[in-house]
Image (cartoon, rainbow, N blue to C red):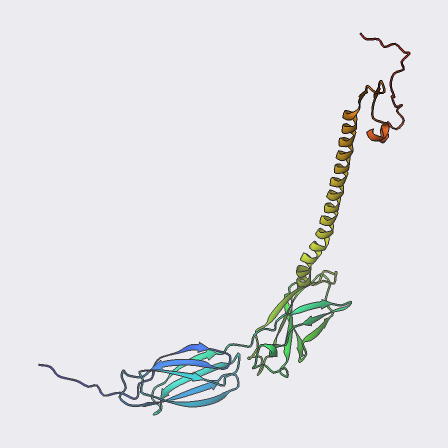
Length: 294
C-alpha cells in the first residue's frame, strides 16, 4: 500500500541561494532559485536595487516558472555600491545581498616631466578606453610623502596634465591620478601611481629608471666602437708588418752568387727595411784580392 502526498506550496518562503554570477562596470548578473522546487505556474518576483551612494531605489519585476532564475541588472554606475533584494510579488520573505560594480580603469601612460621649479604630470585620456567616462568629470590627483608619511589632495582637473610645485629636496613622493570621485568620494576610478625621487637632481625615479638603459647604451656603444676601431687598426698593422717581414725574407732567400758576374750579390737595403738604410751594400769581391780558404 502507498499514498501520494502533495505538499501545498508556501508562497511566503524567500527565494533561495541568491548570489551574483558576474559583475561589470554598468551591470550585474544575479541568480537565485525559487522558494520551492518545480513551480507549476509562473512566479512573479520583485527585484529591488538600492543605490547606497545616491540613496535611490529601483524595482524590477521578473516573471518565471523555472526553478533557477537569472536576471541582469542594468544601468548601474562604475564603482557603485548596491543592495539587492529579491522576493515574491506578494511581499513574502526576502533574500538580499550587496554588490559593488567594477570601477573605471586607471589612466594609462602616467609620466613626469621635470621643470626648473616644478614638475608636470601627464597621462592619456580615459575616454580613449572607457566609453562610460566623460572628460567633464575630470581627474583628481593625490600625493604621498613617504618621508613625512602624509597624503595630500592636490586638486582636480579636466585636462590630461597637472602642475605640481613646492616639492622638497630629499623627499620621495608618490603621485596618483584617477577618475574624479563622485558623491562624497565614494565612486572613484582606479588610481594610476607613479613614484618620484626628489634628490635635488631634478629627475624622477621613473624617468631615471627608464633613462638608465639609454644612458648605458650611450656609454657602451661608443666604447665598443672605439674597441672595434682599435682592433681593426691593430690587425692592419700586424698584417703590414707580416707582409714586410715576408718580403724581406723572400728577398734574402733569393740573394745568390752570380756566376756571370763572378761576385756574390745580396739584396739592397731598400728591401730589408728602413733600419738598414745606412748599411753598406756588398757588391762582390775584387779579382786581384786573393781569397783565403780555410
